[in-house]
Image 1 (cartoon, rainbow over the protein chains, first blue to last red):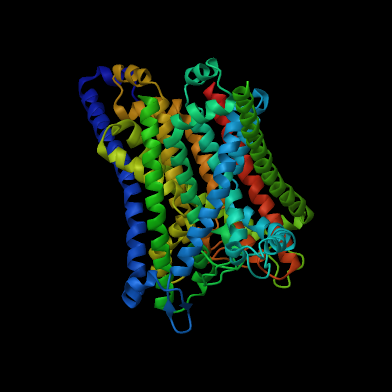
Image 2 (cartoon, each protein chain N blue to C red; image 1 turned 30 degrees about the horizontal axis):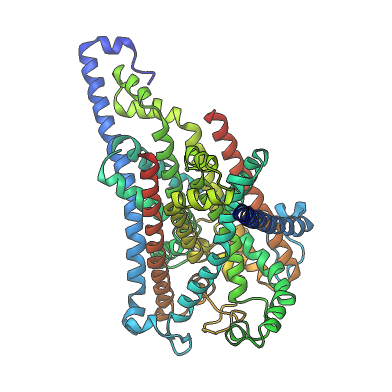
Length: 327
Length: 279
């Protein structure tokens, strides 16, 4: 503050004035920062409120049955959320099944195996990739990956599992290219950098002394990872996985391109399906009538509640880890 | 000796698996970037930046209106979101460091940070579009601002917490009031980190598609009217990629390349900024 020169301070009256101005400014600044902090809470409350209000017509029309009905018929205005909920959960779970072992594997590679020279560049590359918008993964999946799967992996899967009882129905039917499996694979690629960078960060919180002690008594690298690193970071890794899961559940663009948007639950993973977010993205602007729009908002509410729970658990776990390593 | 051999073999197996994971994971991502560069550059020309999106069947034309639309909405979102985010972060790190409010806000903010962006789109739809009765660029910018805020809150708080307390104590001892200490000392010390936060927020929203689909919608024509639907790069990519016209699909690839390029350069800039000030 250039205007507060020494002469101001020296003069009694002016000094009073300056002090009063200082106090006033301090109160103002304090209150405005506090208001902004409260606004963050208001936003979350607003999201919740608007979704609840918006989905009221659908809740009134279908009640609890909304969650357990598979049919989605805009013509007769009968809507049920079961197919999108199923699709969301199945695609996310398959994605996590693929991305978690890969992510942990890469994190082990980065923290234990990788020559120090490459450690930083690879780590940075992964962090940069985690920031690439999901629509990029979506467009790649649609133009490159889905046609590729249609010609290679899917026919092979159908043939290879033809005579195996459970698997044959899991991988039944014509290879469309798009479908639940393709969406899951794209999701896996998308959350991979995310899970990797969190897991790596968590692995790096292990005190070197612990690892050195284990190496000192003759452990192999794998034994150090299994007996020291993983137990020490268990909570953090699970927290990171849950964060990734939260991301996968709510992911829209990467999935919308390749899921096929079919409101049915089919046994086969090769058939088109839909997820909550893909349904909203595909149909919201075309929805006519209150019940249709409101059903889509109700889907959004369900998605929000699911992700809220998952993310809250993830944060609580990571928080516990922070306390552990901080204390 | 058998025991040792077994352990060594097991170690070999798992380490090979870990190496394979790294190769598969990174290779996959390289494949995506490769396809993006290959297809994106194929259609990149001056026209992409100077001409508006073409009508069907989509020959010629460019993405000028979508690029400008994205810039306008991103700009407004940052102008709205940054001050709110910085103020909230300031409260959490400076005035209310140990209050319950801070703990709650930190928790909620972390959830907002990774909340599905399509839900935020629905929220803004209910708040703006449903009440105004039409889609508008303002609604799109508001949705993006809601995404900016948690990113900026998080980095601002983190960066201010890194500022050594002695700096604050020293300036307080000189008689500076709290707001002056924060603005002249804490902000200055944390400036690089806070700028990084804003850059990361811009990177985050420049590729966001879901919240724009039903707030700013899309617009095939040149428009800078904030009260009307506005084109944006992500929304244009979405509709063009799913179209049957080859010209449109090509433009979608070029747009995807532009977004990736923007996002990567922003994140790299942010990284350089932190590493410079951090040393």
